[in-house]
Image 1: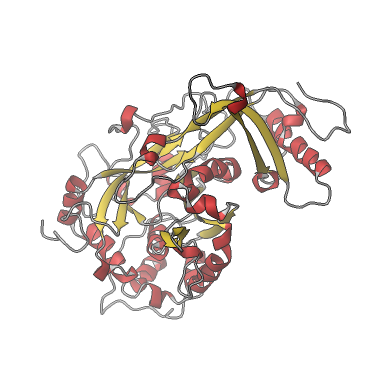
Image 2: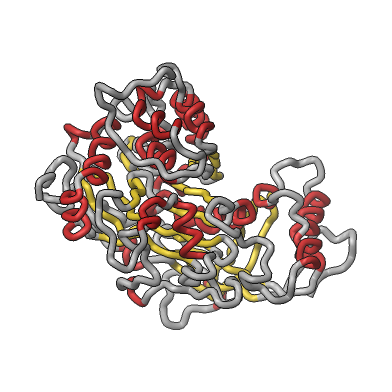
Length: 480
């Protein structure tokens, strides 16, 4: 029910709410993969199911209501309160007085996208929601709008004996919330994801320093950032279409280019790649003592805020690079040669939307290929060389695919079917996906060709600063 009195600032809606913990048991373990999580918080997701057909529940109307409540304020925070039947420290005979209520605030204006009048939009949509009648399904890989997302980044340390985040400390060399691998990853997006957007989520306390670092990097010459690989990249750009996949070559003595003063910003413009930094309003204690630094909490906001702007969103760790199958590597007999020349957008179009190739899944997961980076090689130059080795040495690639797939990777999903990009799980709900599109997450995340992206499509290379397997290390096994 809703209070209809126009002068009433509070509107009460009867609905249902479910509260779900994500990996609670894993995060309560005393030690996981070398990091102590005991005493750290872990995320809870609250999903509210509200009745249909109530005008006040459209984005436009709730936004108006909030402005009436907080006239003169610009933050647009909407108060949310509800009771639960959850009990902290439950013991037999616990009374209702020990149940706890949830009070939160939702930054409504922050999730408003464009006109945001969903009631008006809904009147124009077909009642049949499928890929044949939808206005929002791209017709080719060139039309597909792609965003790749990382963050909020967390680098755990201690300050005065308490958990802290190194990137928040006032250090002159701090990159804020920007991952140290960003420039390496951007190089590969320039090659294999032209026309896409890279979203960097940072905690609001990191925003100023993050912006300063990004601005500095964007105005730096690419001859300084990509010393051994920039000239060959520009040469490829000169001979390719704006939407082509560019192979990776090392510069040679015969490679030269006139644009020695080209900056990273200019290079990104050539390939029509945008960078979007998103400050996330998170109290420092929550960020500092939450497993994965609030990434799971951010995942739901990511889907709510940016799904209207892109067809496909991928959520990945900042220390991973996405590589396509090397063109020197033979394909299975059932594949065509054109499969070697697909950009990320073309691969995701085939997986999600193609009338002939789609696997009709809401989301997919990458294979994660480990490549340990020893401290002596932890520079952008060496990291680019490491990925170049994989792309240019067929035996090295084959060895890594066979022996270094030690963990499962991150995710990519179509935005019209996902309610949360939950880091390692493209979560959807019944009724979220178009007709014919399934939740393809395999039980126990076991291997499935339908759910996982294949080696012939795109793999996630984990440039990790901790060793999991000795032979899965950059600059080894070139001849194997």
